[in-house]
Image 1 (cartoon, one colour):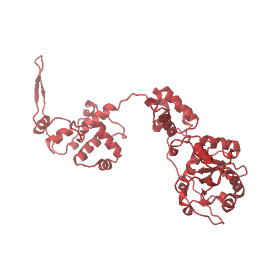
Image 2 (cartoon, one colour):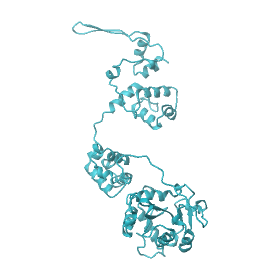
Image 3 (cartoon, helix red, strand yellow):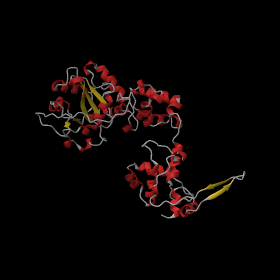
Length: 412
C-alpha cells in the first residue's frame, strides 16, 4: 500500500504520513513562558495495522463509544474502505459484510468525502466517516407526531375509524400535498404506536390496529384444510385465463371465517377487480345445504356481468357446489390442496374482517345488520391496490355501467 493511500485511510495529509512512515515527526514546542514540550515521533507498525491493539482509553479520547449492532461499526467501515480500493461493487461489499446494499450505499453517500471535481467518485475515509456517524447519533429530537398536534389528532381519528397506518400515511400526502409537516410514513406511525412511552399515543389506540397487538409479531401461515367431494371438482388450473388478472370484473373469491371451536361461521365473498366484499349470514350453521341457500341469497342481486366465476378452497361447506352453480349460473373453481395463496385477495380480506369479528368469539351472536355494517365500513376504506380509491366507489361504477341493473340497493 502506498503512503498516499494509507494517509487517506487514516485521514491525514500525505506529508504527515511520510513522517510517520519514516519514524520522524518529533516536535519541540516552546510556550510563551519558555517551557518546552516534546511530541514523540510515531513509531512504524510492522505487520497488519488492523491487528494493532489500541490503548484501552483511546476510544474514549477519540469520542468513540460502543453502539448498537444495528449500526455500522468502525471495523466494518474499515472493511468498506478496503473493498472499495479493490473496486468491489456496492452489492459485493454488502455481501461481504452481510448488510443490505442500501446500507452500504447510504453510508458512502452520507459519510464519505465528496470530491470537488464533477463526476468524480466519493472518497471514503473510514475513521472520519465513523466520527461523522457518531456525531450524528445524539438526536434529542421529538418525533414529528409529537411536534404536530394536528397530525397526531388526524392519526388518532383515523385509527378510531379502523384505518391502517399505511392508509393514513398515503391519505395525508394526498389531502395535504403542500404541507410537509403533515407527511409521515406508515412505519413512523407503527413505531409511535409500539413505543408508547415516548409518544403519548395511548395503549388503547395501539389496540385499534387490525392485529390487536401492541408489539410486532412474526406472521404465521393460516390453517390449511383439505376435503374431498363426491361430486367432481373443477380445479383452479381450469379457470378461464381472464380470471387470472383483474381487468375483467365479476370473478369472486370466497371462504369462511370461523368462530370459537369452529361452532359458528361467516361467509366472505370478495370481487377480485374492485376488492368489494360481501358477507354471508349463516344463522343455521355452515352445513352444505344451509350454506348453499345462504350463498344463493347473497349473489341473487348481482347482474350477469358480475357473476363470471367463484374460487373457493376445498372446505366441506361447498359440497353442494354443483347445485349452486346450476341455480346461480356461477361456475365454481377450487384451489389446490394446501394453497390458500391461490385466493390471496380473500385471505387478505379475511384478515381485515378479523378486526370486526375477532378470533375466538362466537360469530352467531352477530345479526345480519351487523354484517352489513361491517362490510359497508370495510368497502369505504381506501385501498393501496386501487390507487387509494375505495371498493364501494369502484363497484358502484360497475353497477351503473350495466343498463340491466335495477337501481335498488341489493348489496350493502
